[in-house]
Image 1 (cartoon, rainbow over the protein chains, first blue to last red):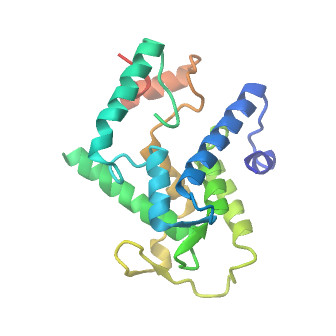
Image 2 (image 1 turned 45 degrees about the vertical axis):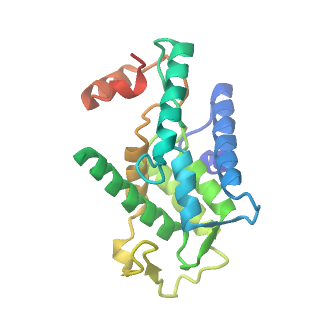
Length: 93
Length: 137
C-alpha cells in the first residue's frame, strides 16, 4: 500500500535494503495491532489505539505501567551489551 | 517533572487528534485496517518531508472514507477524552499531525543500525542536542 502511494509521489524506493526495511516496518506495525486486537474483530477502540501507540513507543508517558519500566531498562542494558557503542536507532526503542 | 508534564500533554493532544482524524463519523470503533495503513504511512522511513507524508496521508484518508462519508454532511467531532464537541477548525491539518508525530517519535533517522550519517544529519543532531538518543554510552 505504502509502496503504491509513494510510487505516485516524489520519493521512490530505489534500493533493496530500503524495501526490506519497509517490509520489516510494516510487519512490526501489523504485529502490534494484531496483538491488541486479539479477538480479530478488526475494530479498534480509542483505548486500543492508545495501547498500540504505546507499544510503538510513541507514547512514553501515557499507558505506561510503572512495573514495566525496570523490564524496559533491562532490555536496554542487554541491547547495549550486545551492540557495544554502536548507534542505537530503532522505531521501537 | 515539567518535561514529563509537557510530554504527557503532547501525547494527549496527539492521541485526541489522531482519533478524530481517523474517526470523522464519531463512532466507538475504527477499522483496524485503516489504522494499520495510517501507521505505515506516518512511520514511513522513505518519504522525505512532512509535506510529502501529509500529502500521502491525505490521499489515503480520502480513499479510506470515500464510500462512507458524504463531504456535504456537517461533521460532528466529539472529544473522546472530555466528551465535548470540537469544531472543525480545532482539528489539526495533516501537516501538523505528522509534525507532532515526528516530535513524539524523535527518530530522525530512517533505518535501523545505520552508520552512514550524512553531514547534514550530523549537523542537525548536534544542533538539536539529541545525540544521547542515537548513541549508547
